Length: 62
Image 1: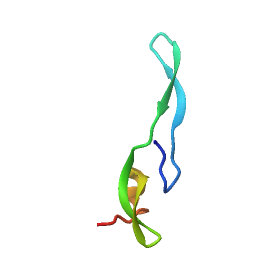
Image 2: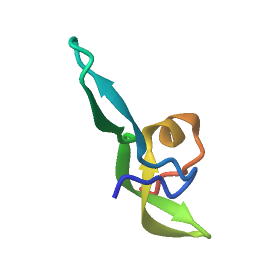
Image 3: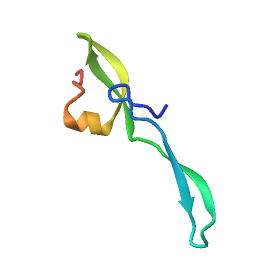
Image 4: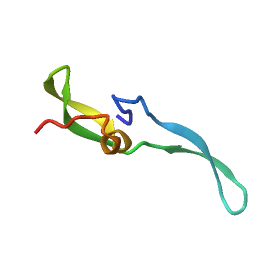
C-alpha cells in the first residue's frame, strides 16, 4: 500500500525514456512507513510518508 494516510500522497506514473528513446511506463512510489501514531487521542498504526513524519504532522506514540 503506497499511500500516506496523513497527506494522501500516493503512486505517480510517468514515462521512462531510454538512450535510444524507447518509451516505457514507470511509477514513483512515496516513501511510506507503518508507524504507531496518536490518532484521536489513542495510539493507532497508520501509513505515513517520511515527509509527514519529518515535518511534525504525525505525533508518534511511544
